[in-house]
Length: 117
Image (tube, rainbow, N blue to C red; front, side):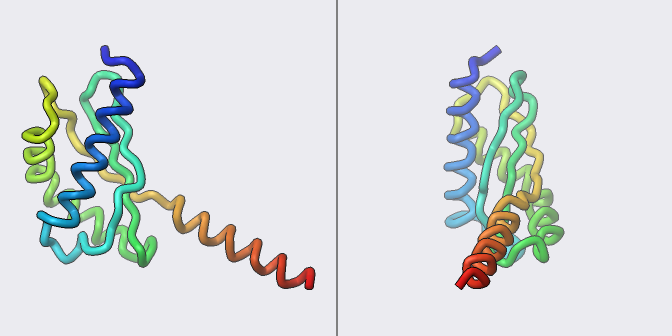
């Protein structure tokens, strides 16, 4: 079983390579202007949970996740050729609501600051 540090390095490498692929190699219009927020690899290297978000927010989540699922075989094959692992984990895509939540909190704080004035 790989150490926690090794798992984090693998996750970081998957995030970097997938981000590059989204910019340069994948031409699906559903995947335009999305970004990978996090990758978590389980201890057995069976699954890589990939968290994504888009500039427009959750309104595009279904289209983005559908696009990623349809391209998952291609993405996994390319990642496996670039990252040397005995077996490459299966990819599971999830929508990350953290950016929207952070934006909402920032707007609330700005409103509070404006009310104090």
